[in-house]
Amino acid sequence: MGLPRGAEWIIILVIVILLFGPGRIGKIAGELGKGIKNFREGLGAKDEQVAEPENKEENK
Image 1 (spheres, helix red, strand yellow):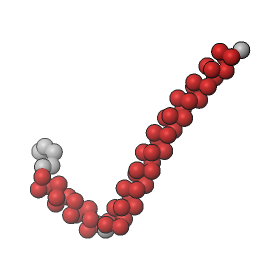
Image 2 (tube, rainbow, N blue to C red):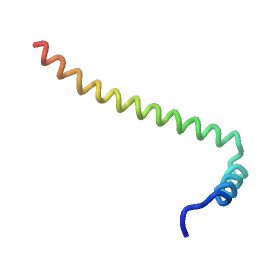
Image 3 (tube, rainbow, N blue to C red):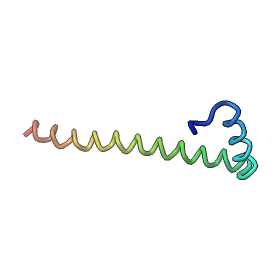
Image 4 (cartoon, rainbow, N blue to C red):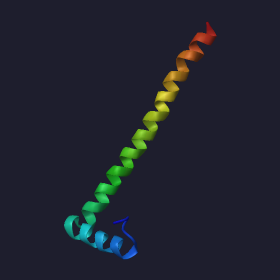
């Protein structure tokens, strides 16, 4: 048993569409994309917060 190949992925995709419907899958994908975007922005904000105190100390 290895990873699914071409035809197996198509069967899996058809089953998922039948279970959830195309509209629901679009919503799930959109929410997942927003979550990833927010996560990346959060990582960037953390880096900026760490850099700000160092700059304040240099000005003193």
